[in-house]
Length: 301
Image 1 (cartoon, rainbow, N blue to C red):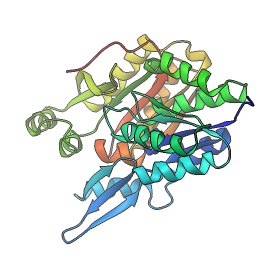
Image 2: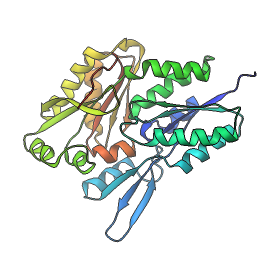
Image 3: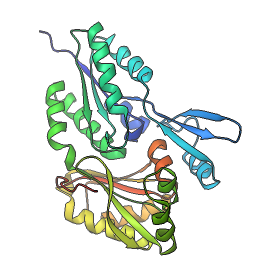
Image 4: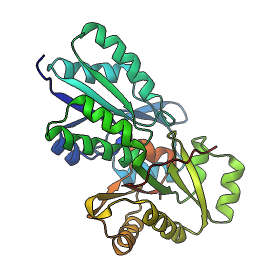
């Protein structure tokens, strides 16, 4: 049987900018979020190109008290994107946001089963990344490189399943209020945490949850601690690009980048925006670091 080409697909949680997607032939399916007004709701596509709104505008909406609610990838969005690819006589490798954070992965499996009845010779492979942001995005970039070197869709899938827990996340927030609004933490935890200046450090755990493994007093101290933790976890830093993601706090991201370059010296450190879906949940001032390291074994409660 003739070898078919395939297209790597991610979603709005991957935070891959247009340049990275275009350069590596990566497509994405859009999630969306709802802006809640007093008399109506407005649904907005979660574009990774920041063409409908800027990162600052998104964060200012939150700072000014607007309630925002995220929506996972719809079955219609999956159907349209997957069908577009299948009609080009190509297969689909979808790398999904962690199933512990979004229902998009489960939706993709339903759409996959429906489409394969119409395209029996096609392949649609869906992988639960157990991560988000540029942890998920980095997986897509790595298999895109494998694809260019001749790897099959099955070889890319097997790599992801074997190595996805090696994509590490370390993240912290400026305030706990947005995690409270998103239902991620209790109101009392946010209240007392903010009073005492407690900054949790989150990892993506072994089942894909965002789990606070440490709590540090003071924002600058949280950055220093994240870099110290990274120093212990990272593998072969000289061979990899590390991503520092931020929600409208560029100066803080630059400070973290400088710390990483001084203490760890990776091949490259790239500063990127935290995308609209993750940003809505964690709020302005969020900083995340993404890199390949030791396999994650911690499971939060």
